[in-house]
Image 1 (cartoon, one colour):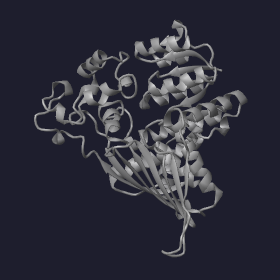
Image 2: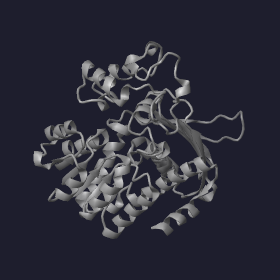
Image 3: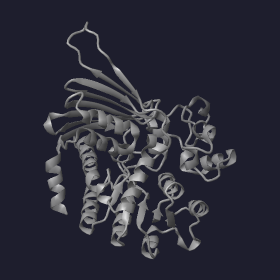
Image 4: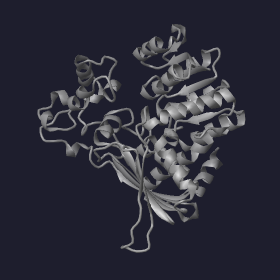
Length: 420
């Protein structure tokens, strides 16, 4: 298959490298505003120089033929690139979020349906062996119907500092609210596991910690100039120098040497004090959701954690289960009649899984490729038609957080559809 890529950053390259290296697809064109990323793509994929673009729209207008377009540009560019790709008659692999704007999400979904084209959204957790196994257990009925769920995304202290304080997704005016950008995955997983639509949603959260008033006394605007850096866990040298050549250091610069990293910290956004950035997204947010059939769920995202993982507790009619995707472990516990009877708790170890997102990226690309080769794109596990609801939930959650009001999803969607 012939694929074109818009956005040669970390996520776009993961998908494209898998398509090229493992599935044998041809990368016919690449667009990115950074020339060094285009050069890397040329070396890796053998893409002709004439098919390397700094303007994504020029790529979409110019490329003579392609079977699909991978859209991995910044959040607020997704809509323009996706709609233009659909106009070319291309199927899409679309990085989440579909768009930060709920109307744009609905428009992309409607256009794809009208044109008979596939838009596969990168909801990679639906493909990770951990969540696939979790769903199999719940769908088997062995625990009875789901009653309620407690789900947490542990973002990780250094991860939130890198991506949502210093990084690309620090400001919702430039990208998306964090519950959309980071956690539309989790809202999608809750929809998938329950098999039910959301009825109403309330959300609370704020930017509490990464603020100027919490900066240590004597600290500076940039880590390399800071007199108290040795005492600060967010000193950028501590964050990036020990992991040169891998994430998140490889985001800063193509020059993965000590000198290259220090230059990036001296000149770029990742060398800034985390308490003095232009960030405005929440560093913690809690959301309460009622689904159909009275199922309730609480979802918490927080940067105030050491680990980067997702943990979940599902309480059902006849038993409960706990899951930790970081450990690859699921514990299943049937209910007992009293506090003295014995019972058997079953522990499932998913085992080591290669690839990012616990194997989810690999599963996504194989599903996408299978759909293209067998002309069954509508069967995608994460089609845009299946993925829109989680995005509307994220927008509704943010609306609730800002207004202090519970949002009823049917009314919210009706208001949006009237604007189409």
